[in-house]
Length: 142
Image (cartoon, rainbow, N blue to C red; front, side):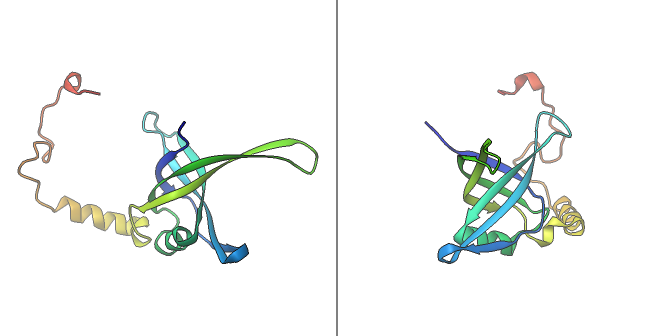
């Protein structure tokens, strides 16, 4: 059986690393993930990272930063103070890839990046580079 997840999304708030027992660094954060099949449908997932992953993510990312995260899922069951059974699903990060930096997560940097990308010459071997390729959707294998 497999117990993995992979999300690409944007960090929803400023990051803060906390130190727990044995000097272990912990970062709890949430990412917003768009549904590619349904416009305006967003899911929010709470992620936990430990050690260097926690420190580096907080150092190089911030609210709005785009990240790719993969890891394992763990369900924790417990009884609350009112003697009710509860369940929490935790997404533990094994890898976090920074898809942009703290500075790029604001609108001005994204606009500058978009201008820089649009000024690049299209690849000569890429028939889609100029957007002129005629593609019939029925020809696509997916």
